[in-house]
Image (cartoon, rainbow, N blue to C red; front, side):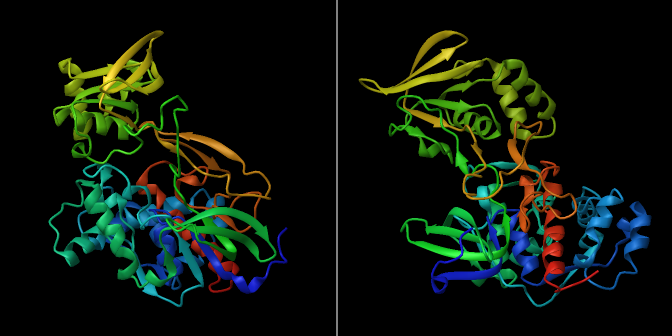
Length: 442
């Protein structure tokens, strides 16, 4: 336990949120005083009459609900707030949302994020489409339809949304809800330790490496999945023509590109580079059958899966899929890069101008020092998204063996890897903290 530092050099907050993506950002707004109330809606009443009956008599904020009792009765808080926000998956009008938000005094909190708010969406390819309609990516206190109206944007909220439009929405949230001063961007937390006040965090400014320390009573860890990029761990991985980030085809002059991956981001990069006229070698460990099953299941609902299906079926010599393969080494050749690939047991050398590694990332739990080990559970979804979730209590997403530590978004075990479900965890976490601090009571 750490407790004897010169405390005048440590900044204290009641709550610190680590991570400013789609899990941490809405929590900041709710802790900042924007509390949900039940207003009901025609659609919610028609579809969930028993829930409507139980909620319409509630005069206080929904953050005062007995979340433990809800969970025991078979209603996970994340599901309740998902239904209140999205009583049906198709958006018709703002009046269908059964929530309204009223301003209350904020609790003392700070959000720390190593990039701008929006999390991983800041770093995905420029034109990447989501897997979900735009309105599934919104926060209940700021419907995408409202944002579109305020900004004069021409978008259909039921269509898939591209990165640029989604990140513009997320970037607007802090100022729109008066939380800018409580959000510290471009700060990277590098260590989390026990402290007599709860938690001690050490962070560095991104770029300057200046360090600073914070303490807090409650900590919400909402860093998202790819906070540590995976490596191939092969010779030549750090050569200058090897990139671990793909944004757009214009960033890769030349004709020949090796894409290493097999997930959605790699699919996107390989497809977009091919359509830009490149010679694409797509290297992945999985077998053809596994890759093709996902593409086939998705091609009639998601346009970019339809496109990669067309490319593969065309058997174009400019698109070579190397299944059951892995990169053995990367080196400088006389006039180009050379990538040695073990392709189904045989070595193949490919001359390239660029190598793009889209092999995903993992959650960084190594920051926690001096605590009981986190109990991890592996989670997968059908789109090859995978991560280690942490065992948490189902009513408040607090870590089972570390009091006052909460896992935000996908990091909480039992939470589905579907965006329409993720934001609902916000209210159980905020409600639990506010109830413990006697800001509200049930």
